[in-house]
Image 1 (cartoon, one colour):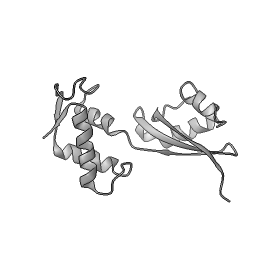
Image 2 (cartoon, rainbow, N blue to C red):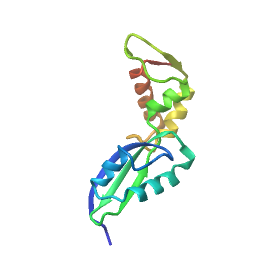
Image 3 (cartoon, rainbow, N blue to C red):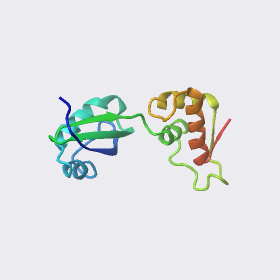
Image 4 (cartoon, rainbow, N blue to C red):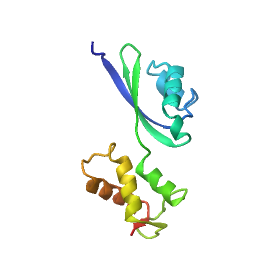
Length: 140
């Protein structure tokens, strides 16, 4: 039997570190979702990504049950992680902060391909290059 979907909720939570404090608790509680059950399931599913910021899409149903899908890290976070930087350039059109190789871009694109709105690795690479440019990173 198909459950009636009451809505969807998008959050970004650090892997293995979900707890009922804000912003998770109030966001889930207002929808009638069991906060502790979500935290237990999320932490169990993301043990291998401890401390990494992960987007999660929570689908909650009319009977107060829920499902969730954990996505890969955002491209911008992966770029900063590879380059060991804290943040992107404040003026990406004038001030370049780092260089990245095409091979590194390809690895990020392959990792993120399942979450992107494209079907080929070439398109994913172009999307990653666009993100890098908007952060002030030069692609060699």
